[in-house]
Length: 298
Image 1: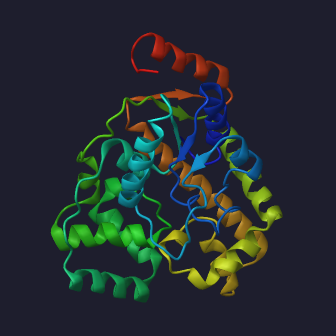
Image 2: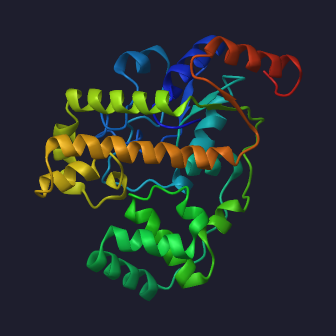
Image 3: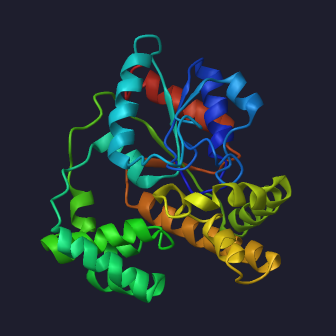
């Protein structure tokens, strides 16, 4: 796990090749087939080299939540565990990883009138109003949520206004844990290096045709899958706001902000062992020591 552009895919491939196993993706956007460029899905060569799961296997037209992922991924892992003693889970979506490993508490029902009023206010006042409201009512969740995603912000506001419970409190609860031992590896690197990687990745995505990809899914812009960095900025441009150069700058800025929120989320987990992404040999050696010392069965 780790922030976007930190090198998670390369590490997952190296680990999967070393341990002769497969990769379960825990990325909330790579699961959608229409978004290969903007979500930095593994290449065709990488997918052929190591089998991956939950990569480009459904459409943005169909909702896919953390709870959906937890349920489906746990079943997939159980199926794979018959053939493999070790599996690799790779992703930067903190809520998906938490749902998989720790389970999720059931969310309370929200009165329909509360949900409707918040949706009306959002359409009337815009994203900045929604961001301000969540920051006031649930600042802890606001510090880690994707603040460019109105669906998640509305859900958090619905909970606190409709039930009196904060999303941050509900996320702290524990459901049924994954019934397998888990080693958690986090990737981090100095901010200038991370931000340079982010900028280079965005430039590469634009060269590969990110604008064309965004235009193709523009008719589905209201879907939850597209309430994310890399697409919303293009949608604004298609509506007549800004220039292509400004779109690129905004995507880089919003991606850097997202990476900071990812790290804020992961830093709370004291069970993560942190490495620089260039330390692949050291990471493999560390995992081997955990096996040898009996911390996890291989």
